[in-house]
Image (cartoon, rainbow, N blue to C red):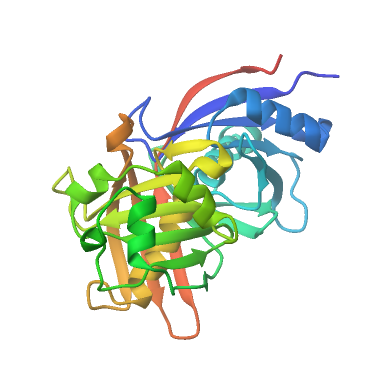
Length: 296
């Protein structure tokens, strides 16, 4: 059997070795599920993506995504990174759009070029579902090693999903975001019965003056202590900001920074519009190639 190709890319990165690093395996259709899970565990990135077929099926390329702990139906940076590899290594010509068939559904990824190279990629995420929001601020703050007064009461603590569910927690200040630490005992007890296992916090203060929000993701349940850039969670956040008129409007177009606290600064671009019956959401960013080779 021909050895599958392996590609490493940095997603939501302004330059190499920033953003969220992703492994993409071309030729994933040769592997059983258990083998893909083993490879993802050995890679030990937040996610590893497998291109199952190099031909479009039902309007998109079939792709599966695994964390070190389990397969997940959707993730943001694997969607952008895998679409980039399909365009660069399989199509080998400019494409306006590459559509992925994920377990959660079809995710279209649009390409914006500078010269002949992709400059920016945008994915359109699935319509959001808004779950429970009756969370006690004191219990959530204890889980995050914060004070109840650190939580911003202008918008609710809520579970939101565009394919993968997240618990969204609004904080007042960048200082509170920086100070947050997971209390593992309280965290695992808290998420045990929830559909959302990852906790996503944000504040309207930033390290970089050109950005509007600073965010952090904690996902110890999935074997990820902290993620440097999370497209799926930021898509949920974009819907949340539009729905609750965080800036007084039913739409947003903002720059979000993530990963500063762990030394991998990332930039994500968010657009969302609340149209009443649905919320349209797009998440954009750069993809930078790092390395390629063959899977041993």
